[in-house]
Image 1 (spheres, one colour):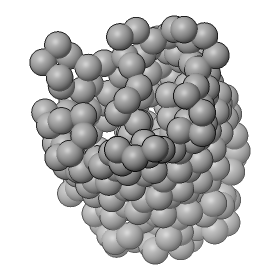
Image 2 (cartoon, helix red, strand yellow):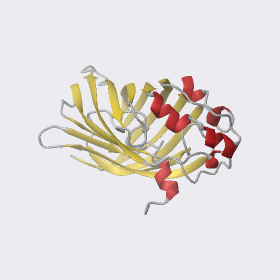
Image 3 (cartoon, rainbow, N blue to C red):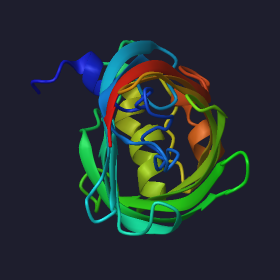
Length: 271
């Protein structure tokens, strides 16, 4: 690939920190009152799901409201187009880049089967509530369903998320979110399994996980408008692997079930 591997792998966990906080496993969400924006985020994340070695990555981000009032959101490896309203009922298609696992630093995990980078597609459905009181806070929740159609993994991945954005000042937003992700057995076997040949090559025990609840997620973020057309942001995003994913020897012997991503970003805005 022409993209440097440290930047490409960083897409797996980084949010567009200048505009909010999320990861490849979850739908993105930002307060609907923000203007159109485009920018870059930079941060630190783990090399692969369940790993502990860290790397630096850079991701782009775009948030654009069309003349017809539809919302396009693209942050790093995930993009969605909302056919619903900026508040109220929301729904539409989604596409994501699911990063593979190759050329990792861990000398044992590097002997496991390589996983190709692939594209996921699916859709989302959700609802956003705007409180019209003195403090116009926003509450957003939804469900996102993605699949790779058997190209790298089979079945589907389903994420449920919720977020709250509160203005602390006309130029300062604070946000927080929680989520959970269910995955198919094929997904877990691809990303957390250890085949018999893997076991021989690496010394890890063979492991064939099933599907189920894969992780819980949570994030905190702040967005600051420091100039008429410029916003800065910071975020921290946590993932706690659970179920068969957390029991994988890739996680228990070589990595950690607690995954942390953090970063900062800068965005240019327009109305």
